[in-house]
Length: 561
Image: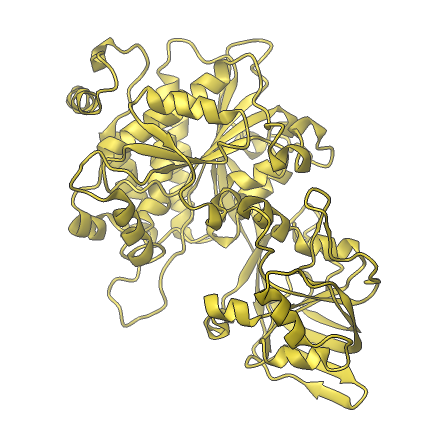
């Protein structure tokens, strides 16, 4: 601790952020050594990549839970424990079982699998088959805010919706990404029983069809509800297929508008209108199911204010990664996930320690939530959002840490979602205390705000931000954006996201700046916990009207702990 005091003091002098020495600051100080220790364990080969449902991830979750227990935090999982077991279903498509047959006036035409189409496994049934008319529905979107209703004037009851991938370019990226995630719900609410998506030439130029079929044998995973049914699934959608852009022409053979005309409209940035395709199709497949479970870890630091202690600031990070690579020819087979997301968990654990060292607990409670299944589709976080161990309306804000890249002395911080709620100024002030600037989203086209665990709570109405190291370095000899880009292209989701490999390429891991990141995270959570006012969505934000406030969500339930 004395050693780190020197490190922090030197860092503060370098940053020029304060004239106070470390010993003069009243709040607890983050430890670079502690962050290093957590990362060394969580990113070790012995945990075999922490794949969801694996023994390695169970060990990681046990480590996290015992660390939180040792700090004196209260368990907030199931049955008085630190764990919330997430029931999961892993589904695989039975090889060569997927069939797609078009029924036309000239007879039946079967499309070749997987050259012309492919399908994913069915998480609901091991055998499924539907035969129904086809209706083209454009992008398949409905949005009052943007004046879109691709189903207007169309009858989808008992039919298969044929839709385009991607999203209209005139809709902002985060809003478009949110709408895209609702596509299956829109189709089901209109009465559809299946969805066929067309791989357009425009999509081919960005992501070739051939790339997608490389993952045909990859299982999909869903969390299960109390009835053992997959959550987040529109169960009436019993068939699905993704069709090659050339093979899809057969779907429009008897329609009033050709598929080539639709493609031309896309080139002109227009939104095609829907129409009946005047043929029907049979979609069938067989799937296998493997039901497993994997733990979320949940702990609470109780608040000190009698009127506010039942409200919670939620700090999240995901503990899972992607496991082992299957190529036995390689000696380096463990996807260690040092930055993704051992770093985020280490920062959360060190933040928790700092809170336990306060002379007085903050007014509101702090809920530490380390989730599983992020790499499988935000599963652990979404399960918690639908099965919270504290009332959903009492969760006032979420700060999420996913993949802080601790490879350079960052000078700025990105807080995805800061522009949507009152959390933005809170983050900016907290970062400024450590001499760090808050920068706008450098990749708005990526819609990153909708792509990590916090988004599952956003959908329940809870304001959230997702923190990431920025693209500016305090070292003029280092190009932070280039380092971040290099990490993402060369090491993200690869065995070389390991402490040893990253150190060889970029030099020592910047645990000292991990401590600064932790300090900022602590500052944010402490300010939120002590502010008498709850955070809120900004009136001008799209999410203000779409998700509302958490107390307006009536369909969530609380599980007993």
